[in-house]
Image (cartoon, rainbow, N blue to C red):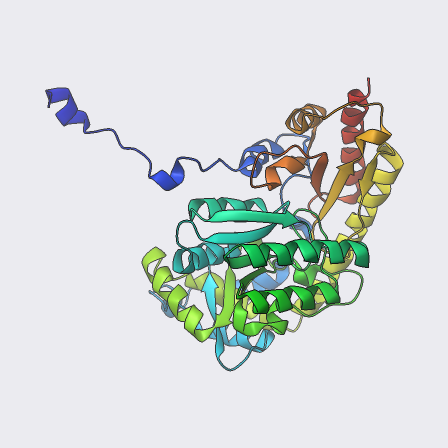
Length: 407
């Protein structure tokens, strides 16, 4: 060893599991979303104007109690655990674990129950954060076409594909967003929910149900969760970023107590416990008599913003761009039927997204939501973040980008 080697030390190589982990496209595009006069349809950002600021101010005066500044229990603050159990009744043999957002909950599940090479079934397109978590866990991801359909015939076809996959492959988990899917905004019908549960029970597949948007339904009837229909086989992820505020970074996992026990072992190694002042604040928010009013106002505001985007898309975008209606959540999925345009062949979605930035609006190309490289003629747009006026302006800016494709 030379003197320089001794001084500098050997090269430090990233672990194998990081070698092929791609940087988050959304993190990169959000870096430009804060530019002056930029309209952002890219991130899954709640409306800042709808944060329950007045309630938080009322409750924040008690967040300096000495017991909240000490170490806490790994499962969560007792006060918050009690509120969560009351707010979301569960079987006697189930319990809840507080996490640093639903994303940590997913990471804990994968660390506790997934070995390298285990197979996880997903819908494609799929939430990007989940795809990255599966990749880091070195799971084998197998996709089926999106299940949230518009007709019984469509759903029957997709269920046949899902059953074929379960029958032919040793699938450990099926990852599902039953309400207001990210990125498509679609929801499962009641029949689809029952059939998915039936197939999972028939083939021994466990469910990871991700439900960050469930409480953002602004039209239609609320349907049972997969966790309601099959509690023994489901690990349920909840997030409070969308209904309170993301800066708190709080979520939870609900599951059978024996699963929660395994997750606790991992969390104790990961971060010891989630920060206590924020847990106390969330407990106060969720139990406050005015929080239900906050949720109702939030849903009404998102309905107005969704309607504004839907109307603006129909008014300003070409006829070969279609939008499937949604009943809640934060996203719409724009599909481009190139056969109905003067375009020939495929489009470069990433280039279109770059051109949109040049026009002062950010969108997310659909291709980033697939586990393998795939060309898709679609874009995800977020309607919850921008004002009604900005939504119309942003869609008109995006229309100029699409118009350039046909020149």
